[in-house]
Image (tube, rainbow, N blue to C red; front, side):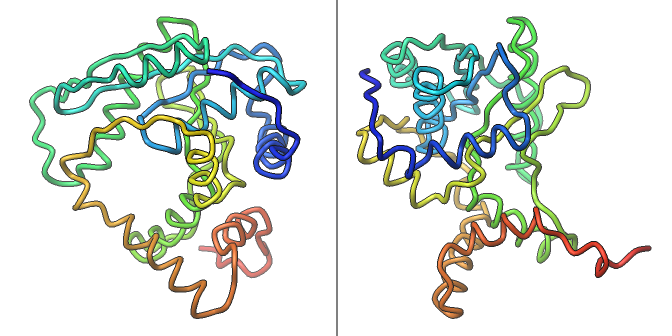
Length: 243
């Protein structure tokens, strides 16, 4: 796949992604980065973005991608073909549920098992950083879910370690809204893995995605996800309640 230079990409994603990478020291010089490639638009677009930065920016790093199959067998060749077109090494493994029943907290359990399988494979290959396709809209959704579902304040971190592993998870797209990623994915005609989750309907995250849209309409505020993301970096410590 051709990776053309486009000066408009600075406005689209380059400036904001590099800002996140440098602010949180996500990619030290010579890092081995593997994109956690689910097959959805977010991770597919993230791989393109990092390949673009590897080719055109001052950042120096090695890039690969990894996909962990879940629950059922399916054709994942669209992912391996995409990686081949980008000249990016592609790794794949199959999730082992160990006979666990995935009825309650299925999203949490699936994510935990996938992360463990990914950590093991990347450790074997000497890769110590995994890039996840989470964006500002995910940050905002998680923030609201934590308030209403878990009665706590906060969201996921831009960089976080995996317990029992040297692997660090990085999230270079935290300053990009989902709408922009959707636009970029479509304009570049990037592929998608046609494989839906059997438990997708039980995911409450989609309700919070709708809530963000309703809040924007009701309050007359645009870019609410970016506002929430910024608030996590602008905490008023004097007004936090202490136990």
